[in-house]
Image (cartoon, rainbow, N blue to C red; front, side, top):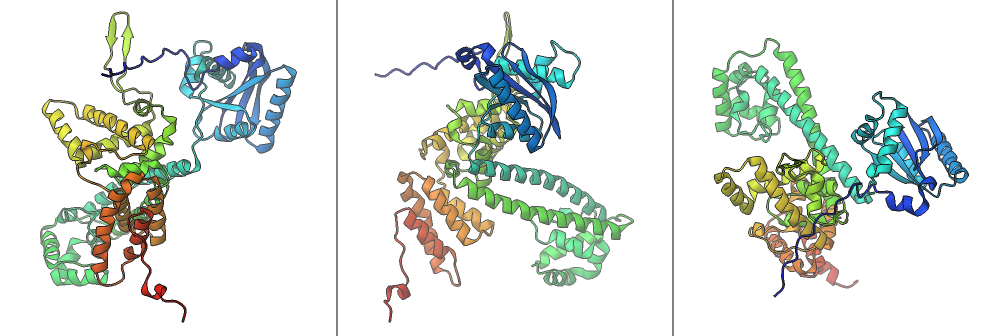
Length: 516
C-alpha cells in the first residue's frame, strides 16, 4: 500500500524569492556588484549608482524622461562599470503608477536586470535612517530594499495575455462608470417622472422604459396619449408595446405625483445621460467580444465547462493570472490574491486565524471572489455547500473565500494539465464550444470571427473531449437545418465538427458536379 506523502514544510526565507541577489553577490564579490537606483516622477527621475558595500559610484543626479537623456545615463553607467570593475549589476526602480515605465523599458532594452521596489517597502527602509523625505533619502531607501532582496523581478507576459489584461481592465473600468451612470439616470428619471421606473421589472433590460420616457417626458403627456397613443408612439419608435403594458403605464400616470419644476431641462439632461449609457453599453459589448477572442487562445477557455463560469469571468481570470506556468502550485494562486488568514505571533501569543492578508493583488482577488459568487448562485454543487455552511452559521465572506480556494485547485488542475476531469460541480453538463457559440450569438459577432474563435478553442481542448463537445453542436445543427430562412450557423457548425474529427464537411451538390 502506498502512503500519502507528507506536505512539505515551507522553507524559511529572509529575502523575497523573486528579489534575492545573494548568490550573484557571492559569485562576483560585494565590491564588484552594483545597484542602480531610480526614484521616478512624471517627467524626470533621480538616479544613483552604488556597489553592494554602499559606496556611491555615481552621485544622485536628475535625468529627464527623454530618449537621449536616458541613453546618456545608461552609457555613463556602463563606463562606470568598467572604471570600478563591476561584474554584475541590477536596476532598482521605485514603482510610481505608470511614470516609472519609460525608465524600466529603457533599462530592459539595455540588457540590465531591472527590478521594481514598492513605495511602501522603500519607505520602511528609509524611515529608520532618515525621517525627512527627499529624493536623496528615497534613493537610499530604494538601495537598502534592493540589496536586502526586496527589489522584485516582474514577469513579462506574452502578447496575448498583455492584450487580454488591457481589454478586461478597460471593460471593468467602463462597467464601474456604467453603474454610477445608471444610478444617476434613475435619480433624474425619478425627478422627471416619479414612480415611473416601478412599472418595469428591470429598467435597463426593458426595451420600452427609457425610450418611452425620452419620447414623453412627463406623466401628463402619457395621460393625454392614453393606451392607444402609447402603443402608436412605441411603434413610431420601432418598439413593440403590449396593450396591458401600456395600460399599466397609463394607470401609473393617473396617480403620479407632481414632478420637477424644470421638466424641459431635466429631460434634456436625461437624454444626454442615456445616450452616454447606450454608448458605453456598445463599448462594453465590443470589449467582451475582444476578450473572448483572446481567451480562446489560452487554456483558460477550458474553465467554461464548469456551470456558473461564463466567457467574461474566465477572461477576467486569464487576464489577471497570466500564464499558468508562473504558478508552481494551486496555493500560489490564492496566495497571490491574499486569500489566506493573516497571522500574529509573539512569544506565547499566536493568532493564526486573523483577517485576510492586506498584501495582495486586489484585481486578482476581485476576479476570484466574483467567480466564487457566481458559483454559489449558479452551480448546484457550490450552492448546496453554501446552504450547508449557512445552516452551520458560517460567515458569508468565509464561504466565498472557501469556494475561491476550492475553485483555484480546479483551475490549476484543468489549465495546467489541459484536461477536463470529472468533478461533482460538473454534473450539469456544460460544453465549451456550445457556450462560446451562444456568447457570440448574443453579442452579434460576425460569423468569420466566431468561426476563428471556435477553431482556436478547439485547439485548446484535449482530444478525449472532442466527441463530447460535438454532441450539442450536432443537435444544434439539426435544429438549424429544420428552420426556414437563412441560417449562418449551418455554415460554421459543420466546419467546427470537422475540426473535432466527428463529421466531415459535406460539399454542396453544385460543388460535386464537375466543370461543364
